[in-house]
Structure formats: structure tokens, C-alpha cells
Length: 254
Image (cartoon, rainbow, N blue to C red; front, side, top):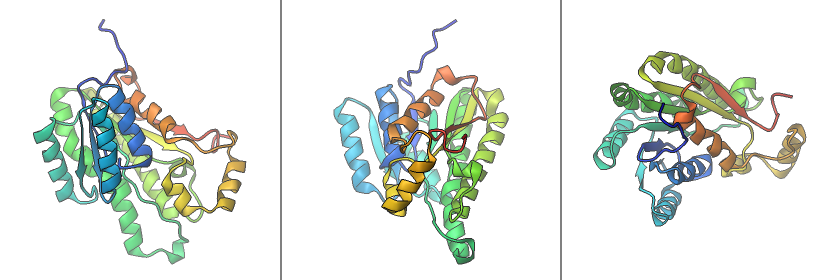
């Protein structure tokens, strides 16, 4: 039997929404394991370029490509650019996401559509583009970044939680569908993570209340989510499929 390891050497890894936060941490971790990294971003141009410069300086093959994952046309263009530049996508991390903190009765239909289009439709569109090559190759890894709120729900974030719950159901179904082709699809459901997203939506008092609810007593670091993600992208994780890994310091498992 060939030696199995967690190297990603030479494989093309696309991470959506990777200009900062969890996505950027995954990009660094994948690059460190030898992957050819594609950093997708929508509006975080400066952050994405800074990240790419960092990765290239360390000797990694990396490029940044702009694209709105909620647009079928832009996703198709994104995958064509990747194919023409570094090759077809072997490893896909659907990380792009937006949040919304609002009561249901105060939420507009346009706000609902925006969250669903990015968080759920975006993952669908990227999988749809990636799968034909993965199926031909009889190998591939898909990791969808969901949320612990997609499991337990969350007051004031019903729409966000619904989008992540849908992503979890999509992942479980997709994993079963593609398993005969040597492909795995798994989801990671982080609890609160120390990123710009959480600090921009919660004030100091809210974060203190949150920390009191987390048995670990702290927020997760993006690198902790990335570490689990690159394991699921590796050959070591070949028999892990259609699963949801909750990384939340015991927050919803208490």
C-alpha cells in the first residue's frame, strides 16, 4: 500500500472568500503543505494581494482571482482562469460567506436573497464547476465552511443560520452522491472565530456574554479551523465523507 500522508503537494486548491479571516488561514495552511493555491476574493482586493505576495515570497505557487461566487457567469469565468493558469481544481474550499444580524420581521427579501446566494448558491455553483474534472480524475476533496449556527440556529441571525443549515444538508447529500467517484465532501461548522466578521457585528458586551457560554472560554483562532480543513483535504481523510465537524470549544455540545 502506498504511504498515505497529509501532503497536498502539486494539487490545485481553490479557497473562495480567502482574502482574510478563515479563508486566508486555509490558504496559508494549504500552501505550507505544497498545494498550488488560488485565493478567490470579491471585494478584498488589497488583502488578497498582500496574502499572495506573502505566499509567493515563501516559495509557494499562488494567485488571486476576483469573482462573485453568487454569479454563475463569474464562477464559470473563475474556473476557466484557474484551468488556464495552474490547472483544474483538485481541492475546493467553499468559504465565501456573508452574515446578517436582523429580526425576521425586519429582514427584506433582498437581504434574504443576498445571504442565500453567497452562502449556499455560491457553494453549489463552485461544486458544479469543480465536479466534472474531479469525476474524470476519480479524485477530489470538497470542504464547505458552514457554522455551528447552522446546527443549532441563532436568534437575530435566522437567515444566516438557515443558509448554513442548507449548506450542511447540501454537503451530506453531495458526499453520498460523489463517493463512488473517489471524491469526499465534508463540512466544518465553526463556533465563534476571532475574525473581522465577528468583531464588526458584536460589541464588547456581546462578545463577553458569548465567551461566558463557551466552555473553552475563548474564541477560536482562524488557524485552528484551517488545520482541520487541510486535514479533510488530504489523502489521510479518504474515509471521512458527508460529515460535519463542529469546532466550537464545546459551545453547542455542552
